[in-house]
Amino acid sequence: MRAARIRNEARPIRYYGKGIPYLQDTEVKGRLIVIEGPDASGRSTQIGLITAKLEADGHAVLNTGLRRSELVGEGIMEAKKEHMLGRRTMSLFYAADFADQLENKIIPALRAGYIVLADRYVYTLMARDAVRGISKKWSHQLFGFAIVPDLIFYLDVAPEELVHRVFQKNTFLDYYESGADLGLSDDMYDSFIAYQHLIAREFRSMQKRYNLVLVNGNRPVQEINVDLQKRIDDFLRSH
Amino acid sequence: MMKSTKAEGKLIIVEGVDGSGKSTQIRLLEKWLRYAGVPVFFTEWNSSEQVKEIISKGKKRNLLTPTTFSLLHATDFAARYERNILPLLRAGYVVLADRYIYTAFARDVVRGCSPEWVRHVYGFAVKPDLAFYFRVPVEISFDRIVKNRPKLKYYEAGMDLNLSNDPYESYRIFQGRIVEQYESMVEKEGFTVIDGTVDIEEQQKHVRQKVMEMLPRQRNQRAVAK
Image 1 (cartoon, rainbow over the protein chains, first blue to last red):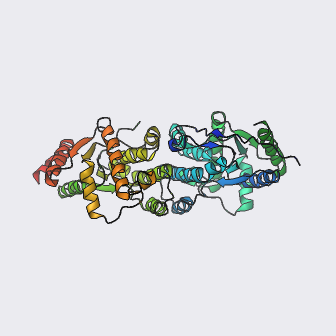
Image 2: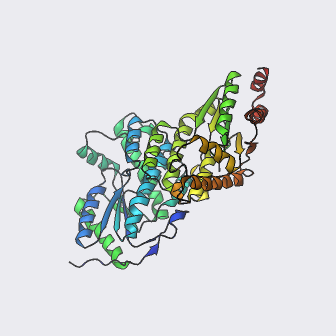
């Protein structure tokens, strides 16, 4: 098998906003690829398949995701269980978790030439905030320190399909993934469907500004994978 | 930009470097207001239960970068803001804050965060009705702190900035830079400057005078009657 070639030229980091002033001179060689999508949309399955393929092709790959930072990951879990933090607080908590992973995992890996596959990125955080009434301008500026990824996929799955996939994994709908804190409906099923529609709408509204590639996630795993892998391989070949 | 407080209550905050005497002053102010029967709530920087622990864990293991340091303190602030400060202001309380957003504007910028970014992050916070800044030359605040501390903590001394290998020297430089940031805000943010080098009672007299001018008349009179 022929390895997809990747140009290893160092280039400056591109940020969404003001960036991280003390890392202004940092150069990166790797690539950052993001897979976005709701819970049970198949993100982790796809990331597993893509990682295996890229590694087989000879690339160094790092997986990362939200709420996984050593520093704050657990604290967020605790706080969520207790349902006691306000919306702005949760938003900043997640931003701290993201910043920790960005500086301690993603940027070092990119400097070393890794392909970083991110299981969700700032878009999920911005969509959640927007649905909860936090201004988009504020969220965008908050993540002014985030790196602009090379590729961003959004697995678009109809909420009605999503709910069945969730029930195949769990016997209940998650409190936050159902937007239960928003008081959309007393019926958890209705709340889940309504919330997922709101989130999907936010993602569509972000599509242009952030160059999100919408991928039809209603298809079988293999079909989606062929689609994603082809786009990734094409990108790596041409850059 | 910051919204002006539509709330009934009043927000009074104190700022200044460690050892400027601001905490002593706000505690005295609190006692006076309580004695006069004014509904008061006191809150201080880095004190929310959920976030404080994470920050202290990060500090102990030197895990914090300037950005995570900033965002965690913003999280702590937001937790207190959403849970206490804003609802209590709405309910008509006098909220007293020992350090407010200006602490972040000073410290985070000295640590290397973008000044514009830090201000955006805290863009949701209301502007205080009265912001006292306790101005003290670095030598004096330094002496006050160092006399009572056998050892300075890593982040407290600004050791993460690589200013000096000596914690005391690092602390002195770090505090000096924070003072510069505060001084640059005095006019723009409308600080009421208090000379932190004069007697405690003298400072408190000025503080109370300013507070009295601001409080609604009814309360004002009750306070005066005492």
